[in-house]
Amino acid sequence: QVQLVESGGGLVQPGGSLRLSCAASGSIFIINAMGWYRQAPGKQRELVATITSAGSTNYEDSVRGRFIISRDNAKNTVYLQMNSLKPEDTAVFYCNADVHTLWGRNDYWGQGTQVTVSS
Image (tube, rainbow, N blue to C red; front, side, top):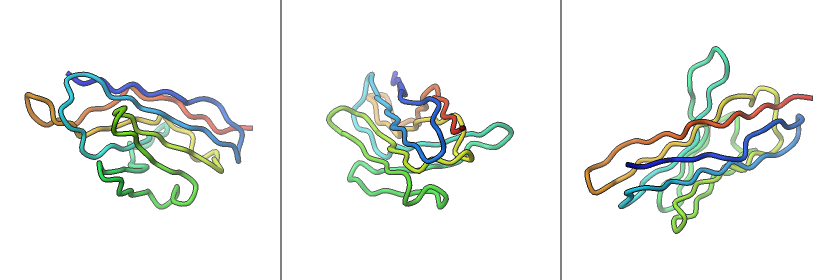
């Protein structure tokens, strides 16, 4: 099995920054794309950013220019640097990974980490 463990969430004032981390562990053969999603209260989960194993990135329009996704393939870890945070960024952030194991290919999710932007 594969586990994704997120860290780095918390409370921050508008305009502040946070850095989220997500480490994958377990019976991993190859990790393809990794990404971050978020779910605000009363809303559906939405894509924030993704990054391929080669480093190609994609961002949701509202975070482009403020958030930066990166990954360390040697550590099976993906990061999300969040700058110029706004109250509307408040949500539970989830890590996602497309993983090949010895038994096949599956999509895995972390448990989520709360990000609250408030003064």
